[in-house]
Amino acid sequence: MFLRPQIRPFFRFTAAVAVVSFLAACGGQVEDTRPGQPVKTRQTAFKELLRSFEPMGVMLRENRYDADKFVAMTATLMSKRDAPWSHFGPDTNYPPTKATLRVWSEPEKFEQARLAFFTASDEFKAAVDSKDKAAVERTYKAVYDACQNCHKPFKER
Image 1 (cartoon, rainbow, N blue to C red):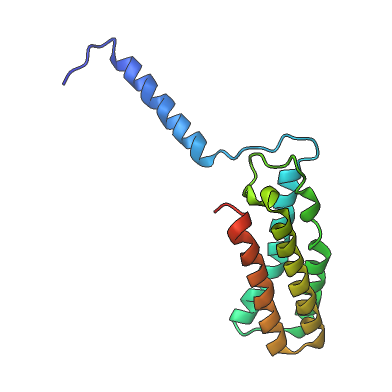
Image 2 (cartoon, rainbow, N blue to C red; image 1 turned 120 degrees about the vertical axis):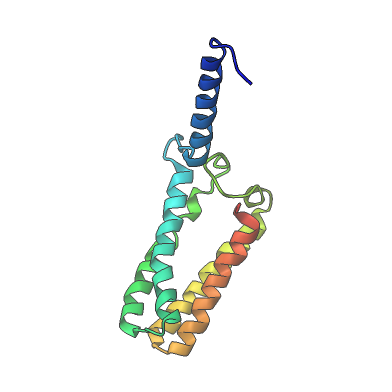
């Protein structure tokens, strides 16, 4: 099918706009422009928690447990574990949040999940301080499970 010459530029322009829109939707992340950036702050805090926690899991999975490194890494984890929670204010359910509405509609359950994480991380720290590898492995898994048990209902995937 041949298009009239004056129609071709319209289709080219339309196709170009569609491609640009598609690429923007795929790669563009919504920016947190609210005062204090509470959503971005809590997301950054969770990423920092993960960066302090995951290397220990790698060491355990690769059977490279080093008790002294774990003590230092756990100190970092414990120093960062409080950071995200205060940024779940009542007016912080807006893009770019990945929190589900359940954070605000079921605050008691969300608080229980937060406290479960604190309990598990306290037990993990005690195990790390004891330098008992079996206890460290068991309590590492408990912290991991506490994270997952909170993510399932309270974080969009």
